[in-house]
Image 1 (cartoon, rainbow, N blue to C red):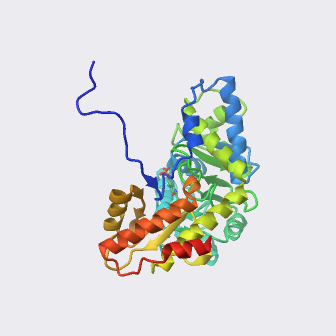
Image 2: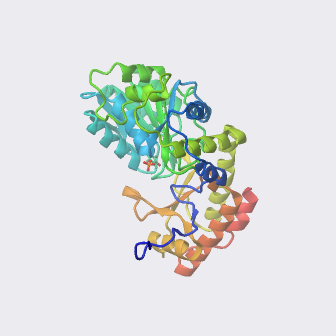
Image 3: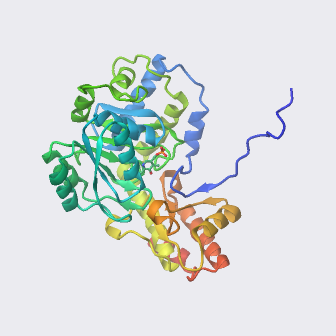
Amino acid sequence: MENPPGVGELTPPDRTLLGPGPSPVHPRVLRAMSTPLVGHLDPAFVDIMDETQDLLRYAFRTENEWTLPVSGTGSAAMEAAIGNLVEPGETMLVPTNGYFGGRMAEMARRAGGEVVHVDAPWGEPLDPADVQDAFDAHQPDVFGFVHAETSTGVRQPQVPELTRIAHSHDALVVADTVTSLGGVELRVDDWNIDAAYAGPQKCLSCPPGASPLTLNDDAMDKVLSRDTPSRSWYLDLSLLEGYWGDERAYHHTAPVTNVYALREALRLVAEEGIEERWARHRRVAGALKSGVEAMGLELEPDDDYWLPSLNAVRVPDGVTDTGVIDYLRDHYDLEIAGGLGDLDGEIFRIGCMGHGAREKNVAFLLTALADALDSLGADVDPAGGIDAARDSL
Ligand SMILES: *Cc1c(COP(=O)(O)O)cnc(C)c1O
């Protein structure tokens, strides 16, 4: 039989992925994904599950028993956390300083919760004093914050201060660590975060599909003592406990291949050492930052809350974001992204994540970006980027 007309062999372009995710996948992870499948209840797979959970605890810096990959993308882990921790009628406090705080609010509403806000402009972190005021005003049951806001390139500092405020009001804290896990300093236990979720395709350099989630005993006690079951059957953590906990009973078929991939990606994290990995992201992204600044571009966030894994660079006069993004894709097979929401058209978002956070990618990006800006007539002097990056390294 012939192939259906027009559908040829799969040959997607060979892009260098320096956008907000997915990031470049490590060859060892790709190889793990071509490993033959076993059944999701096979004793061999149960061992693989245990190892993956141990490696996740290492990356999250936690002893939490409740540490598992959720089947689905980062948003699935996000909805598992919020949908199980927010009960109907409860109040969740969420930030307004980026795109993903808005998604938290939407999920809390769908869980039957009331949403209240703590404000900060897009491009700035939350101020603990404002969080304190919001707690005094609203007495929320759950507080969500975004540790690494991929829409703005802002890293939330002072996390222990935020969790202290929440706990003094008997609230649980949910952290979005999608763009920090494995790339930026994150200490779930030391910082007293009750629940944290992440995604595999950012700093872990793994394809999307199985997404890290960890909950401490306080959070899990709340999940297991809910008055009504979570509205999602698929993401009900009290049911997932049966599969990822001691029982290992069927709930749904685990994405076996994605678990293989995540295990290998996390093995790479452990081999490198988590602190060394954080340092590499700072060093390589620091060179990228020096380079773009030397070209006359402006890096958006202040140094105090700069997020190495996602660099927000202001679009210079004389060009449009889409003009530059298209040029890089068409001439260099290089992916970066534009802004979202309040920052649409204002910034480029340049990822420096996992296997992408390498010196050769900085040199490539700076060269390609200089060409794009020069060719398209930006009002900057694009020379000198590479020298500055080299000095920084
Ligand atoms: C990417 C991202 C998500 C959502 O993850 P998906 O894998 O796209 O579902 C959530 N929060 C942040 C901060 C992200 O960067």
